[in-house]
Image (tube, rainbow, N blue to C red; front, side):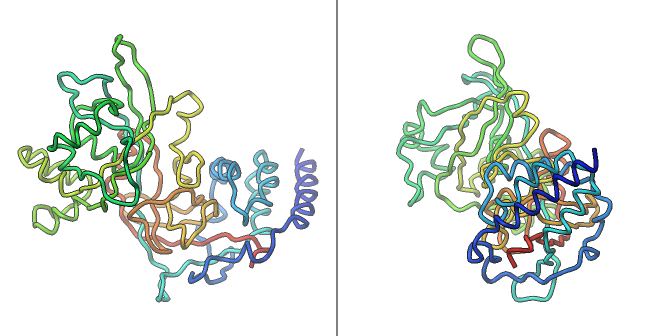
Length: 359
């Protein structure tokens, strides 16, 4: 069996060499600080369970960019190969580049994490479920700000513009804020007839206002020393009468679309900015001006929250993800993922794995 796989791999490699895209379409993005590196420079490269990352790579190949599209037939063919064969193929086809911070010789960056909350909701408002989650308003103009969060909560004109756009109702505004910060969530919705639907609320747009961190505001006001999500929740518990004032510090409101969540869909995360479903532990959000979507990346991060040395795929972005050495790590869904995402903030090193024919 291994001889067959090796033979097929050699045939695909020969075919791929003839399919190299034009040089102008595969050059690294301008203004990047990428320094050629050896495979031995990648911490933990010989130990990673690559088949987990291969699932994410197969997803990227559903919508590949011009740089990596020609490699996708080989990626698909190697999905049943051993980790040794996958590793040998990577070393033959790709060149590692250590990513440096702009204007610096440093390779130290920042890693945070995000997740999908799992929430309970109702289709209609009722006791304990009075916080609406909205579809995109009919007359939202993406070129200028719409009503702010405070205005949506307090102005009759804003509420009138959103009437009939309610998808579901959650139990409290803090849950709604968490859903909007993460950009998607899984919700079990009690329907009008008493039945239950399991859906994903996926990002559909926002009101055009800049995102403002409520954690940073609490730090600046001297209200907190720990601006992690658990720290923020602790402050809210102690100051319930100030919840609205806190949430209004972030004027951005995110709107959603509803997607049915079947068994296969539930095995992956929401679609990221690349347009493919995210894989827990193997997808990251990046600044696409520094690392193009679909790029395989070697990630290393050591800290009190988690130790990571693994292959990941750049498949998403976010408002706070700016610069070459900044990444958001998708950790999955549910309470455990939320606990990790809420406290993960630690050092980061990245190596872009770029096709050798694209140097």
